[in-house]
Length: 485
Image 1 (cartoon, helix red, strand yellow):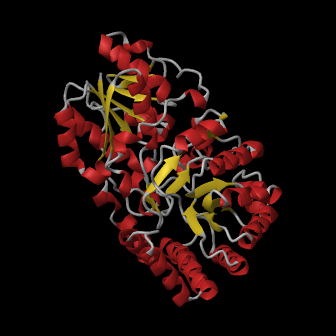
Image 2 (cartoon, one colour):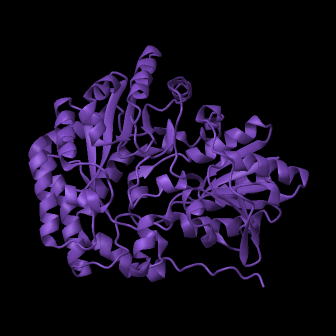
Image 3 (cartoon, helix red, strand yellow):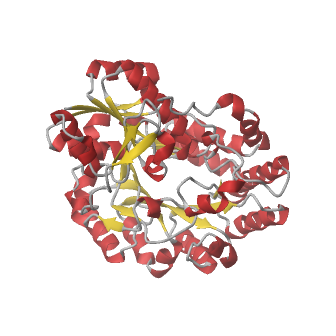
């Protein structure tokens, strides 16, 4: 059977899509599962191809089924509009949507253009779906699938029990080979993604990961991780695990095997500060695997704030971990959650923390209730918009205590202040010389450097964020709902 997988074009205003532009790894795993069973697959990244050229490739491929990925809430309109385009250009194809957001709220994707929605891990659903479509069997016997039935969705039962990750096929990276040079994270390009685990044992109220994975946490063996790493050509690797090194013994064994294999990469990981405090030797071991930088979801600067988001960590761990990374000369990016109910003293406290720690690489996300999370259920009546493009973590979709223009003035000041601290600590000239050296040695590309510098400037201006609210209704109108009688 011929199955095409599409990633919709880039949209939105700012947010994550301006900072990261990464491969559709989930589609690669699903395609790998299908290819292992003898099916033929195509992956089209319309963010690179463009919609019209990409759809021309899709028509030429003549798929019997088309899968569309919708991981983030900001992708909702784009995914649905793309499904409608697919139905127009390939009317005989079965159209299915999957991904984190589609799994969290499948009912939102109820539309004439969508034949089915995959809920949960795609690998366990897509192969039975393809085989059933190919044989003309009963789709109601495909667990994990939701079928459109007029104005309703019909569940075909829960997805299969989540498997041992070592049993998954290798991702079909060959299907994105032409796109691979274009993917980046911040200034790092080209960049590949590596998944070593799925899920999270913690229960932060703003996060959807643990809910998508039904409170499970599964890991690949160190041997499987190295086997997969060997297939990656890109010098920069972002490890997608929400908490890396959760299993300390496994983390050390991975580092040992990577070093033994002679693999050297620039690794970008995400982990918790309490792990770093207890096991700084892990950081040192991974430094020997090439180069290392760490994303730290600190979220709040004090214990009261951490408790408010159910973070299950202590501020002293956050501060100590920063000191450890500074002593070990390892790059780090702390990230904080800005509450729309903050007043000016709250912003000032966070600026003071950046001053005190010298953590000039800090990032600032606005508390955003994503559909399907515990936070969403708690505050849904307060949400001020269904313009899903604004759910990009740098715009507020909840009422602010300060007037909106004052809130964004303080928010932009955080970004500007972090940049000022960078120049104060590292020096303006030294900072730009370092960037110039990175450009000259090929560690970053000119386009990535330009985008990053422009982003810093844009985030330092309140008008950047206010403009999105002013243009919201004109930019994105909610698509009409299903029209089937």
